[in-house]
Image (cartoon, rainbow over all chains, first blue to last red; front, side):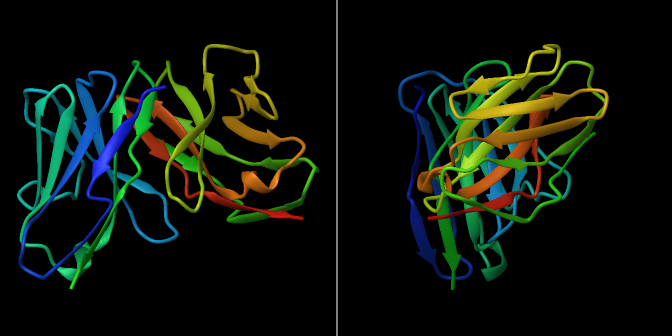
Length: 114
Length: 112
């Protein structure tokens, strides 16, 4: 099956620094990738839709200047959390669209901001 | 707009028994898909089963089956012969308008 990787799996950073999370489709090309955020014991909330070669589409309430998304190739999308603060600490999950209605998920990245 | 409701925050079942997880949804889409995902402690999201809304026949994947009631907008998941490895969070989701919308999840505990 389709495999999606994320790197890093866990990152700790100081408040005010920026952190980049990579999402890769390993054995297929993904024109569309999605970024989700999951707080402890809660559901996944869609942050943005990332389309290769174009600007990401952000969900309402998500700060696009804080969560920068780049989808420069058919196998890589990146999420950069700029000027991170403790409230940005969360579990970030990406997914890649395989078929029109199916997504495969990465293993997630745990971000802790001190 | 889409909404997904899972009214059971937690469920438990004896090993080898059957359990049903409930899910209701609402969508303005005429063509949509429904999913059940499993999230074990590793937090990797795993697709359990998928249902196309235009299909009347309920989807089945080995020990997992759904009861899809389109008019009632209900999409429950039945797990037969429960195994210890089934312990996880289960999320119901609907895909429409190019995005997945998840329910709040049901934590399933398997009692040995």
